[in-house]
Image (cartoon, rainbow, N blue to C red; front, side):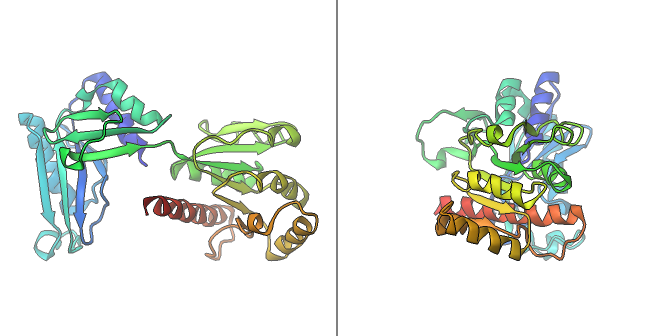
Length: 313
């Protein structure tokens, strides 16, 4: 989720700077963006976010600038066919529907900041009368809204280890909308000289930091410590936690050895072991540290998307 849209709206509310919010509220067939895609259009013609670019975005910008001038909200329905999209290569063949709300900043700094923080699930809407408002647990038919969205806290990614792999994965995971925590017993590496500010740092004796409780949000784990023994130590604790998915760095041979040890010693069940991916990551022929980080996060994105799909059934 792109929190920067809500952050920009909160900043615009503080400065009382006029901005038009555009949202894709419907899509049929192929389209460059999905329902819920958002963009902010400013009077100086600057844009924050994207609706898919090209002629689609240019047309919505034209509508947004009109809305900023006359204060009137607008809807749009654009068919992305040969005639509409040839110049920009945007010939998806689908149709997108959307809404443009001028002066969206007037919903208030408190409102937009609350959506930015994502401390708890919040539902908001654009009503049929083009008003931006919270939806506070009242059951109403979806026909009452032009757009309805629930903002939830981000999924959690716990990383055991603070070495070069963790240092590459953590900032990438933040960009990919995970709330990241790093655990290690090495203060010289587990600090904000090596990790960006939004990362939660847990440094100390493994026996202590492994007792930190999981948050309520869906959680994922990555084990990339400095050696097999430490990996096994963390796994022995984390494998019993309700992680959606656990990934561990290493080879297939390493996993066979650890699996035999855990199953023979009754440290974990076969079912628990099947929740662990080792070697972790999508096979893309990665060799460098940044490439390994990309392969790891690709797998975590896949697992997160699978969870979302299961919950929508």
